[in-house]
Image 1 (cartoon, rainbow, N blue to C red):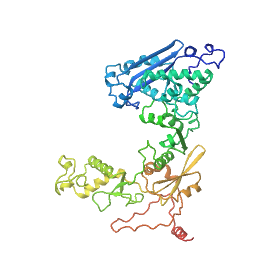
Image 2 (cartoon, rainbow, N blue to C red):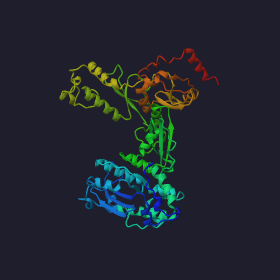
Image 3 (cartoon, rainbow, N blue to C red):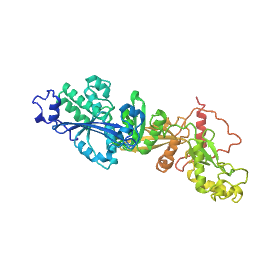
Image 4 (tube, rainbow, N blue to C red):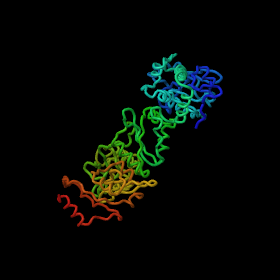
Length: 531
C-alpha cells in the first residue's frame, strides 16, 4: 500500500466525526497534498507539451500557491488558445519544462498528487519528466473518482458539475492555478459534509487503485486472470472501443492504465473506457485467433489492423505463363491453388509488393506490366540504368526471366490448406483445454470438447487472411496434433469450372491425416438424400 497522506490522529479532535475547517485540515495532514492542474497543447502525452502548471500545496506548514507558464517549443492550436486564453505570444520566451524539471520534482515529491481526471495530468508530467531525464513518481488521487465514490447517486462529476453542485468560486476556467484552486475548494467542501474518517477511508481505497481510469468501477479488474486470452474495452452505451490479446491478461490490461501514457492511444482509451471484459484462451495462438475473429464481428473503434477485407488478391504464376497475373479470392480458391503467391487486401498493395520484388531481384518492370514502354522491344527504365537483365530487349530469355520471377516469388508462396476438410486441435493452459476448429484457413471457433468441436465444423468456411497469417507460420506447432472432423453440410449447387480456368489441383493431405475411403465418401453422399 502506498504511503498515504492520512491525517495525524494526534492533530485531530478527539471526536473523529467532527467536521474541520480549511486551516485545521491543513494542520492535521501527516504530509502535504498538492492540487495540480496543467494546460497543454493537446491530449497526446507523447506528442503534445505542457504550456502552464498550477499547484496549490496544502500541509502543516500552511497553504502555498505556485504557477508558471512554459514554452512548449511548438505552436498552440487555435481552438486551445481560444479555450484557455494562452497564446503563442504569452509562452514565447517563458521557461522550458526541462529548465524547471528538477525544482518541480522537489516541489511535488513526497506529496499526494491530486488532480481532476488525474491520469491526464499525471501522465503528461511523467512523460515530461522522462524526457528531461528526471525520475518522478507519486501517489495519485483523482477527484473525479473521489466525487463518484462519495456521491454515487450523482451522474456528473466533471469540474463544471462540481462548481454548480458545491457552489465553488472559480477565479477563472481552463487556467492551471484557477482550476487547481477549485480542487482545493472541493476538498474543503467534502470535509464540511463528511467526517475525516469517512473521507480518509475513500482516499485510501482510491489511492491504492490509482491506476484505474476514472470511468471504471473500483472492482473492475479484481478478477482479471493471469492467463492468456482476449480483452475488450467498452465505452458509453457499451460501444466496443478496443480488443486486444495477451499471454498474461492481468499484466497487459494493467499496462494500458499504468499512468505513463507513452502512447496517445492508451490515454484516449483510459478516458473513454467504462467496462472491461475478458475471455481466457489456452495460449497465444488461441488468443490471436479469437482477437481477429472478435474484431471482425464487433468492429471496435480503435482497432484498424484486423478489420474484415471485402476482397483479397494474390499473384498466380501458372507453368504456361511467363509472368504472374493477379487473381481474386472471388474467382480463385486460395485454399487449394498451388501457384499463388502473397495475399493482399487491394490491387495496389499487390502491385506494390511485386514492384518491390522486381527492384530487389532486377526483374523487368515492363515485362511484368508495371511500367509502360514507348514500343515493343524498347528497354525499360531499369535496363537503361543497368538494373534489368534485358528480357525487354531480348538479351535475357523469357524462360530465364520467368525462372527468376518464380525464385523471387517463392518466399511468399501461399500455403494450400493442408487437410481434406475441417480439423480441430487442442490448446491447453493449466487444467483447462480448448479445441480450436479451423477449415480452409478459416477459424470457426473453439469448444470445450472434441464432440462440441464437431458441431462447429458444419459452419461455412472461406479463406480468412488473418487466420492464415496466424496459423500458416505456426503449422509445425499445431498440425501434428490436428484431428480431422467429419462434417455434414447442406447440399449446394456450384457453378462449373470455366474452360479457360486451369484444372483444380488435387487436395493435399498430411501423412498423419487419413484420406477418406471411396466407401466412406459414398456413404456421406447417400446421407444427403437419406431423409
